[in-house]
Amino acid sequence: PDLYRLSSEPLLYTYAKRKGQINKVPLPIINVPINQTDSVIALKNYLLWRISWNAASNNITIRYDTIFKNLGIDPANRANRKKKSKLYADVEKILDYWQTLGTIKNYKILDSKGRPAKGRNSPIKIAATK
Image (tube, rainbow, N blue to C red; front, side, top):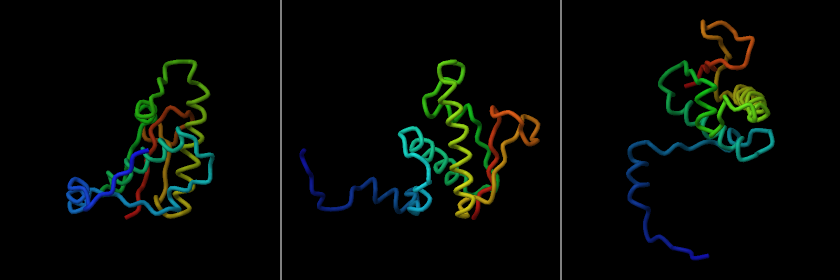
């Protein structure tokens, strides 16, 4: 493989760093104690991005259908039932772990009326820490 040695920091990286657009994530937050498959890594990255992007707000709402879309899962396709089921469990494991670390204050899975959900096809409301 070809290797390149940079003589200075790349211009776009420098600009993003000065504008505060570089997100540094502590290692314990990344090391969620579940099997690190490609889909789990993508899920963690998506959740971290949504939480950090909305850090100014105390409450963040993330819909499962948005998570499916961003992970390339068609929720209407019955062949994806196992993937969806695993994703629901992984979301809860990740958020439970981040809650124990203090990354988020808490989270609730809500129905369309804002009550605790009985089913899994509901939005997630996350209370982010500051």
